[in-house]
Amino acid sequence: MTTVRDWRRALFAELLGSIRLQSSIYFWPELSAPWGFSLADQGTVFHIVTRGRCLLEVKGLPGPVRLSRGDFVLLPRGNPHIMRDAPGSRAVDMFKLVEENTPDHRRAFCAGGSGAVTKLVCGGMQFENGATEPLIAVLPPLIHVKASEQRGNEWLRLTVKNVVEELKSARAGSEAVATRLGDFLFMQAVRAYLYENMDSAETGWLAALRDKQMGQVLSILHSRQQEPWTVSSLAKRVALSRSAFAARFTELVGEPPLRYLTRLRLHASSVRLRSSDAKIGVIAAAVGYKSAAAFTKAFKRELGVTPGEWRRGRPDWAC
Image 1 (spheres, rainbow, N blue to C red):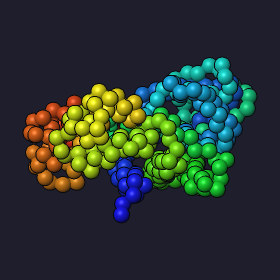
Image 2 (cartoon, rainbow, N blue to C red):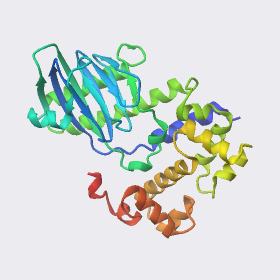
Image 3 (tube, rainbow, N blue to C red):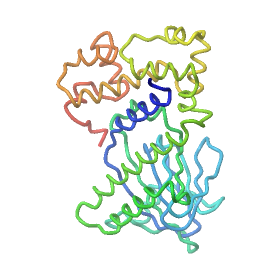
Image 4 (cartoon, rainbow, N blue to C red):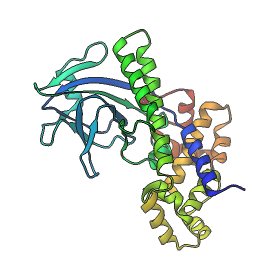
């Protein structure tokens, strides 16, 4: 007999298996106090503290978050944020900081004042499927994996060590290896977040999974996304009024039910376009669109290219 916990785990496995990341870019700053930098609208971003300590302030979240050596922070949606050595230290745009302090061939650079030193590895990555990626709706604005929790996070220490060694070495292929390690860090951090918060989350997508009614709807949408769901039909499945259902779903998941369904459908179709030779009309029907024209319109609105262009190869904007 399949339990609620079993289908949650199956859903986690589906989400982790759906991750398609593009190439990452790293910077390796050595910052002397006072220092500070800001980042916004750069896709998924992560930071590793390899020496010293600092503060992280994420727009919309209470803070700051204190980071120490070995800590790893992931901002899945790239929320605007500031990192600095202490409250009040002036923060400049990260790319202006890079421009003013020319990095070497390893993208390492020094900046700041003459005080205590903090070393970071800063990375950015993009989801191949952009706005359709299901994880965008699932993950919180910030995931903080603490190095101090050594027993549970041995993977973090070892992977961070390998990333730093690769970046230091500048050997042939070191950037490609570091990129793959960055992908591994991302997936491990996401998995740790999902499993550690599965039974305790009070808000967000995980809380929706634990909610008897919203959990049922999420299960339906993931397993039967091709069906012609409406807000009314979904509300009826869980014995709620249309307005009460829509409000509850949006409150917990963070976006309206049909927006979430569109994300699932377009993500599934984008993967199938790259992995099969099925005709576009067949794929459109398989994910729940009544016509190839409606599917093409939705696909282009979300991904900026037509399904045919997507199938032929990665568009220029995704590089």
